Length: 361
Length: 258
Image 1 (cartoon, one colour):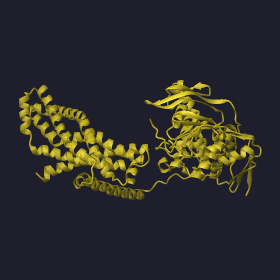
Image 2 (spheres, rainbow over the protein chains, first blue to last red):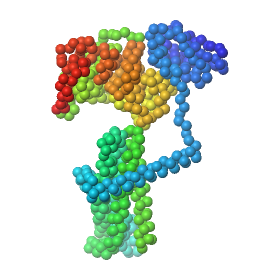
Image 3 (cartoon, each protein chain N blue to C red):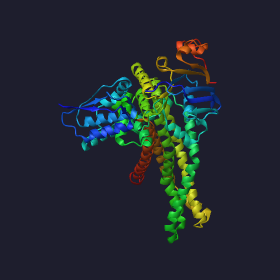
Image 4 (cartoon, rainbow over the protein chains, first blue to last red):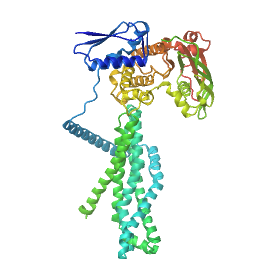
């Protein structure tokens, strides 16, 4: 066991600290050797000088050399006492990353737990939306009307424009194909069936998930972060009753309305193209459109919109309530909610298509 | 290793501030001396935090001036303000940590942005500052994993990272256990004495005020009602000041807010 005594400079600051550490790093530390810092000559030291001593301690730990210090007096002694926790700190390991099997396992557990949570929310929300008001257990009608306005009325303009433009696009696209065979008039059938069965419901759901779905997730996530959700629970109030149910009932009413509007807007878009560009008389176009329409087609689009409404509200609430951490978590969960919304919309649409084209047909 | 000096570092002159229509600060004037621990006290909602935000140029006053080291920060543009703000440390009530970074990276942020020092030294400084506030083991944790008191201390570590000459500290000991609160007072006294840092502290804690304050400014409903040492406060002719220090509630909970 040998001890290397290191005499510290009279004034320990940024420059002298750097030089000191450089000179120590030059000489190898032999196994078993320990370092002794001698503060006897040190008259003044500042925070940067202290930081170099901490860096020196780190170096000594990496080399497995013991570090001790002596001789500090007066203010320097107080300063050394102040930086002592930094000198004694253990080398902290960064978190270990998990292996493949561990990763697969923990992912599986996380997914199962999330599904259970989502199922719980679904049951709770269904009860507090559909049954509890009938049983007279309370429903926040005031919030419900606010939500109807926010989710519905304020979405009318954007939803109309989006569907109108899509109708225009679909008419353009199909006219390019049909015109060659002189079948321009059948573009009316295509737009009518397309919008009543699929396009209006999907486009409206995309608009609503971007507006309402994101808003729900961000609102609940922020409430969770600011302990408002805990405050609700602490007062014995049910989160599903208080926050989820009014939103769910509102969107269940708003969504079919917006979808119906979307159908009209899309068909209007198609008609504009047919009359102005394909030069088909508007009454002929209208007759063709009406003859193509069946109530089954419209019913299919409307029933889908109900499923979309449930998915958008529950996914928004679910992700909002799962938030961890602060501002960053809110952003992550809002993104996640919108991505899951779009994914759910496409999957639900596919399930409905399978049902209507193959099961009931 | 600096002794208390008498030259003036900050001079606040007739500061008037509104939030919308509401008058929050009503003609506040005082000076802060170099290397002083200056404490701002007062009941909740009396404008303490607002005053702090005006002194750090985070808010602009309706009228009046804040002269920091000879220059009026209320008249400065964004860029000049940023230069001044670089030289002061601010520790916020709830930490103000960035959620997306580890505690260590939070403390290292001002060093990496302004320090221009090499990574080894930055790491050592982060170690040193976190050790000072008793969070040596929390370097790799995310702020979301810390308790409120720990976040506050991490916020202080970040505020002192660049060894600024002035530190503004909003409610340092609220929410800390008595041992930690007392430790934090010692840390403030040590930093003040050994590194010559001027502190401007907003607090409610009587114990802590008695222990650390060189001078005290008391606000009440946006007005300055007392300025002086703790000893002077105890014999102040103003009833409300003595009430505060004797912890009496003669007119329990005055309805305010208008």
